[in-house]
Length: 133
Ligand code: HEC
Image 1 (cartoon, protein in one colour):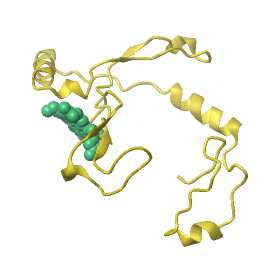
Image 2 (cartoon, protein in one colour; image 1 turned 135 degrees about the vertical axis):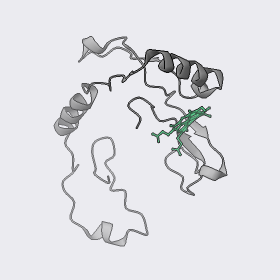
Image 3 (cartoon, rainbow, N blue to C red; image 1 turned 90 degrees about the vertical axis):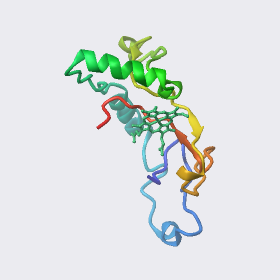
Image 4 (cartoon, rainbow, N blue to C red; image 1 turned 180 degrees about the vertical axis):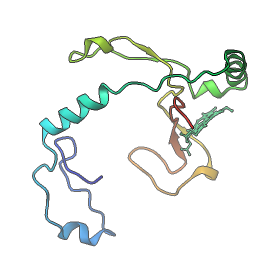
């Protein structure tokens, strides 16, 4: 979002964003560590979407097909949390997010022509499928 913080202290204005360098800064940094910690605590504590299984039989069939045709090689069924000093209740929790959280080269058909961080224009992170649709 272009806000500076102790993680990203530099104003990320590019040459094509001329007005960006003219605007007044919202502070040094714009987002303080205490605000960052508060937002981080809020996001860490958000609940995961609950499963909406109307019909267990078709759910199980679909789940098997999903695995059989290879979707799970990237949309990994389960991941596990690590350990959190601030939130021990979240330690080592298994969750069903259907992602490997990794970047994959999805080919030129999905290229947006923009390199972002270490991601090439054809690379995309596997999105979690939980709560999808
Ligand atoms: C090679 C790894 C890989 C495999 C295998 C794979 N996906 Fe994906 N999937 C991705 C990536 C990466 C994206 C994000 C693409 C993008 O952002 O343009 C994605 C996006 C999606 C989305 C859109 C999610 C959203 O939030 O927009 C759905 C739905 C999906 N995949 C379902 C499937 C299904 C079903 C299969 C099996 C037929 C499958 N995927 C196989 C990597 C994979």
